[in-house]
Length: 299
Image 1 (tube, rainbow, N blue to C red):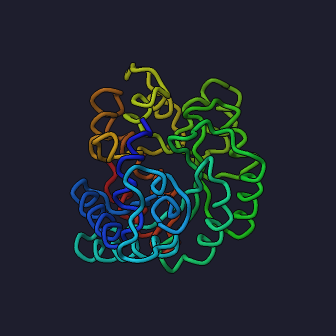
Image 2 (image 1 turned 90 degrees about the vertical axis):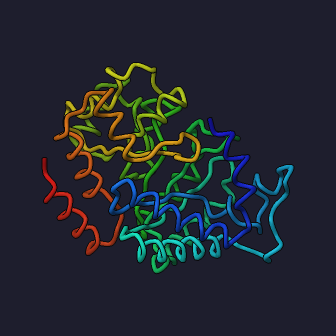
Image 3 (image 1 turned 30 degrees about the horizontal axis):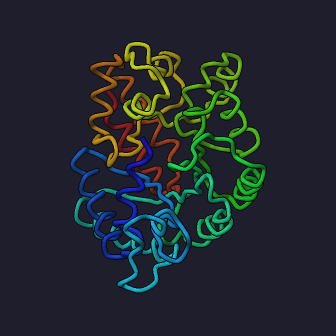
């Protein structure tokens, strides 16, 4: 399910105007789905034209007609789109910068960009896979990078427990000091670890129901989806879309799926939104505003 990235990334990479427009239209899409705040995660290196990335190796080549666009330029283009979108559609948007598994020579620059570009709306880092690798077997250098990010006060989330098992989730929390886990479903394979990290320590899990089935992370049996267990146990989790371009979904459709097929109650869905607000990486003033809005909407 990751191969589509190799199709559409070359259409955006290196084109600052296309990236800005995409960011702007993302604000419009989120607003139409009732979203008041979102964190878009992306790799600035996959969207630039100054490094050797999959877009450069594609049959389309990489776009250079508008000059060089480095990773910082990508972030600035996204920010311009977000600022226009925030003004026109009333949402708030921030960026999470992704390290990409298999391209670890980019990681140090990702950390520096996250350190220096909070003024451009950067609120944290993530590490994710691509079509070349998504096995969650992150090398020690990635753990060291995350430990340094923690020292710098940079927020951290990690893709784990989607294609990997419980031990990858444990590693993300213990060694990489992750504050949030992207997916995390397979932590349920280790009940002791699930109790420790999900129930007792209340690490936040970013669950993506449709994606989890489409990628084969969990079986197609909605009534027994891990989200059902998460909600029953009252753990700290939220609902997310993962990749709307790939899955043709939205946050609204994920909530509808959770309600109609998985069986979450309206109260549990509200709790998901409150969990998301309380665990977001936004600056404290904005975070407080978001929490207050969600609390007022209690079911």
